[in-house]
Length: 76
Image (cartoon, rainbow, N blue to C red; front, side, top):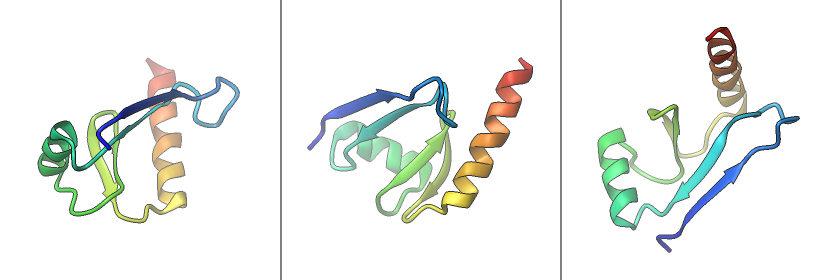
């Protein structure tokens, strides 16, 4: 527990350019992030540093948010 796992996602994936970090809620960093984001239980998900959801995420909502994110980042 407390390990940080960073996994870059394949460029051919729907999630191209996304980096996934797993941070244990019981770690100092995890506890701080959870408190700041209002995460009551795992998993807590942030997109571009902003809280997105916690608990069981909706795949549809997450896909929509990632699609919007990709459209926004493509315009830059």
